[in-house]
Image (cartoon, rainbow, N blue to C red; front, side):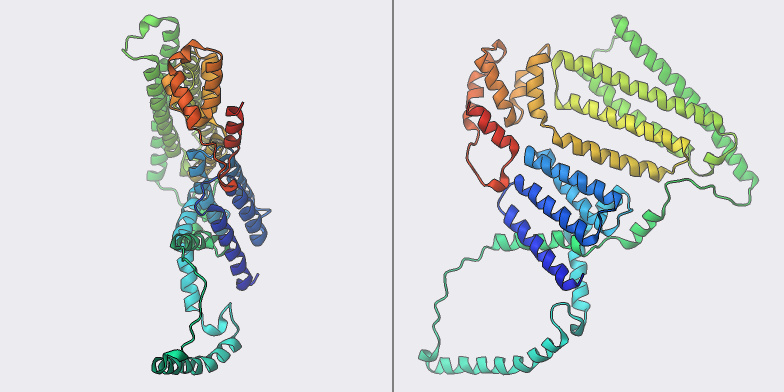
Length: 471
């Protein structure tokens, strides 16, 4: 497609961006804009058969719908993050997610626009995409005569003021904010039509394989000795770590049946959260150790079987430890209800479990460390995409009064406005647990903004909230 038509599509998307978003919060406008953008870019660059683009664009649409559904701060942050990814995918489809985001971020924040502007300035006027060469020749014929004629008209008007044409123009107030926002739109959307990125770095990253290849060279005694000693060191280390984690798991299970073994002065919350943080850190270190010992030619060492077995057991035991942490968190939720920290314990354990499975796959199928980073980045992206789809405030407010043994009303009160209908139900049922909070709940109900607002910023949650509170 010609550059002229490309610029028309670019201008169209910029105008749509300004019309939908200027002076409006994210809501329905985000979902409309993302749907139009993805459809247009997919068609323009013929990306309908590119797997990475379909995954990234599909996740962005899910996030855009989450913004339209809830309009939460988390969904808004993910919306902007995923939008930067689109520009990165347009530049280089095969790149890993971290490099894609880096390219998209730099390009969308001015790199792409500056590069395009510099390229346009360098072009010879005869190759201009906007006007043919003949147009420039005709313009050249008229510029000097028109300029001189206007100059003399100013002289004559100065000599006789009545000769000056007093044309009444309509009142027009220039909106600098609108102009600035439109300019930002031009910068932000430029790399979607004129791809730009870190070419050399991206080419290097995409050239790195996911599968390990044996490095064949003339063997030296020092190389053989290095592999052998490294293998032995890994066997000793994983044997010791497996013994330690097995003892730790056994001790934790015994504490459930023999409470007297718990002598540390910590409540259940501290045990769960500190245990979670320590576990995540230990598993990250475990994965880094495996990445170290299963790199390069160590994967092709003929006596690696014992090391593989011990590393597999290590991964399995770490998985059991993650499940045990989930079990303790479930007990805690049953007693005290859901909170964001407890929800993130479950999410962290999910990410940990998937990370361990991918690490096992790396060992079994001889994958590179870069493969592990690429796959885990996609997993994190999809998990966070799923996270913003859920209205956790509403879930917590529904779950805790109905299932938790103890209800922390101060925490419930601190949540977002979507909690209000559930609290009103408790007030109507004369639930004694909310007796002391009736005035606060009534104030929150009255403070909910029923204003119609603009359809651009509308969210499904706002419509639901208005309908529920009107009952």
